[in-house]
Length: 331
Image (cartoon, rainbow, N blue to C red; front, side, top):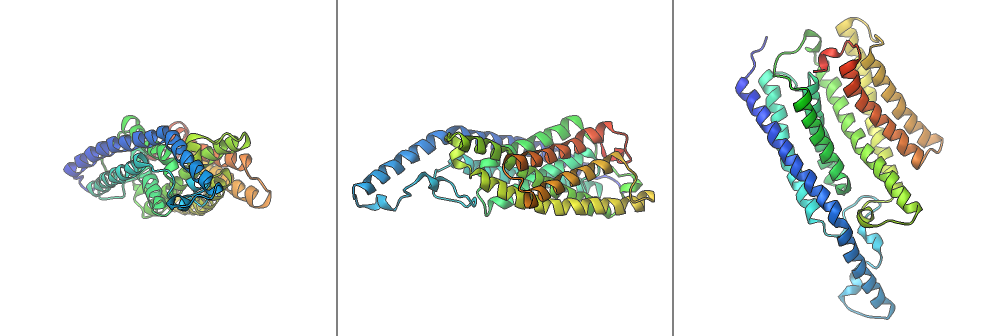
């Protein structure tokens, strides 16, 4: 067995704790952004109304270059606009980037300390998964304005890290023979990446339902004015889920190949395998129903949410309480 670098392992635990506290600061700032958004939106709308009035009476001056309609507050394609100033959200993004760097060091340090990839048990899977969710979010922020889901993303990352640390603390060590395979790198890493995308689309679907209800009753106020339309949220959820589905399909196939090498059978009707397939079926149904059956709006959002809940169930309840050949990965 490869000896464990205890010093590096202790640094990993320390930076994991530091990252969690920084994520907490980002979460609070994103929440503050939501709380103060209503006031900022009202202020800008008042300015827009004044500008519109001047235009109607033929006024001239630099104010005419300002947006004439509240639609300037948000882009349907989630592009950055010059609408409401959001200093709290901008600071939150910067702090989350710092937290991600500390988090990445903690994950890498654990892997180097054990001389293997750092996702061989539930503690490592949850901490690595939280890192991927954060990285995916920050990468999308480079091109798209997704600050409106910052509270959810930072909250989920923080919750995953807290759960891993409190409920599944696992000392750095070597892994069982079945896990000593390069398939551990490909199978699990792709699964984690797919999970990151599904987490992001889950947040979009929840906001889609909220925004759709507000649009129906024509009561789009406060923070919801900074969220794209329900149709835009639905379209982007569909695009990202299509990518996530391809990754999850690879996860399912790679898992079967790995199972044949480890246990001599491609499919064992193991609880973990079955639920991985159930998740695949749900997202396949979501993509098919929306593309060919016209399942849009509320139905597609709820189907996407159901897929995410199945994903969470697979990584929690199935790992902990179902008899499984994958039980060594539980904790």
